[in-house]
Image (cartoon, rainbow, N blue to C red):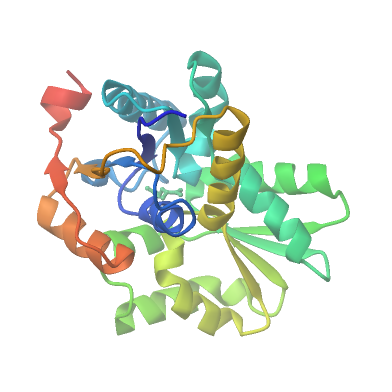
Length: 270
Ligand code: DGL
């Protein structure tokens, strides 16, 4: 047993899609979350900068005495997961492997699409991981740089969002039977994405798959939280405005939460 919290990091609110799944599957586990909305999106940034920011978020989570860190961000996973997981003595999980495995299981025609940030697409990591599992699968990747700003500004159902999703996904419509949502922000646009792709296309939410892996690791290392332990207190931190983060988070998670602001200058860069 280990009653310390699990740490989650993302460039903003996207990692909440993983947290929602954690709350559903492992409701007794305690959460510390940091979203770097002040510097989102990470996707168009150079790899070195994404690596530096990710290290800052990791170091912040370590000060909160976490027992495991989840990169609830595909972009950070693509760039920095291999390096950072080797440097820490607690388990560090990314979102890319679980999503790849689930897509392989789901595809019938061996035609998988991946939508993600520019950096994740550029890294070709999904294609590499999927084709390692099954070299016969055809993988088509598409960067969707306009999606994260929509989600960060809480515009997930507007007519602008519908137009952007429709225009962006047009090259993939009718070409794939399975679509990996390769950015944790994208499940917030899921109804529109499903509508554009058609009901027969299976959408893979890497967050949901990741929580299954979290559970396996908690069991393997015997670090589950004691269900009889005193009441947990989940903590959410953002580098940007508390109100906007809280609105999006409470709406998405369906519960009230405590959000604190973290100063980039004093805490992360300091
Ligand atoms: N949510 C992130 C991801 O899964 C990052 C999006 C961004 O900041 O560009 O890739």
